[in-house]
Image 1 (cartoon, helix red, strand yellow):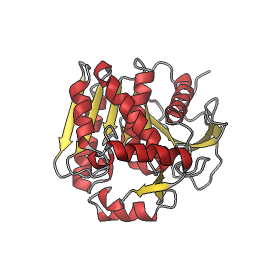
Image 2 (cartoon, helix red, strand yellow):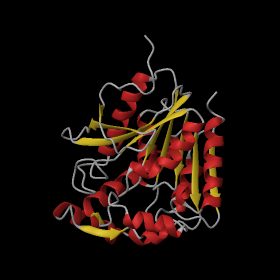
Image 3 (cartoon, one colour):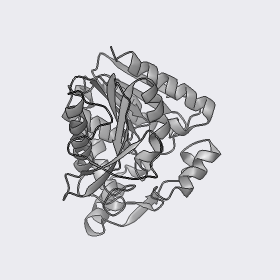
Image 4 (tube, rainbow, N blue to C red):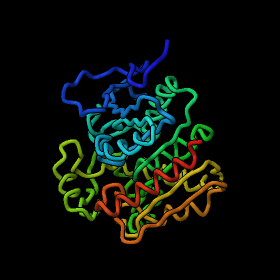
Length: 302
């Protein structure tokens, strides 16, 4: 009996949604945290040559990656993603979490379920912003799993103004006593130079437009510190992409990570004038990003 990429996947509950966009299959899966329900989005292809897990950033959701997934599909890559706990259509209070590793472990669980269907295919991981940090943490956890990891504007450093001893201590105290306190908001004008994309972000009901929670910030800070300490031991293949006008994630983090990593197959691309969400930049700029991303992956498909 042959299986199809469009068949049900064990461990995932398909959502019967007549409003689902064409070519997209929606699922639910259980989080490692209290069995919370996570929303998952799959972009299947009939005869995949590889699979790719896409990991979204803070406050957003996986539905914002339809264009990227569609381009992956054209390269015969089965793409899939899930909304993190406390994000998008997944359970949990917005941007509240127990520990950072929950994000990583949920993505790992999702990946394992898809790998059961496609055990012989190469696996790629694509993470943006917070998703880039999660992608690194996941690849550190399972270093032999990926044929390649793509990090788009990853959160791998803390802004200097937020990294002082007193600021960090204050954050940890607030995190302990007022974990849900909202500290900073993501300013959409720094997401993209494309005004339509900024408007789309601002009006998207599934995007969290409130502030970053104190405990969330503390967990992200701890994860960044962890990755900084171990980056020199990283040996898996990766592509880092970062715009030099990114005001949301420090480009210095990408540069330091790249300089420290021991990987024999490592690529760092710096884009002059580009903002944070490289895949949401104006059309001509976005084309460059997708061409670079797809070429890098295709070179590692065989």
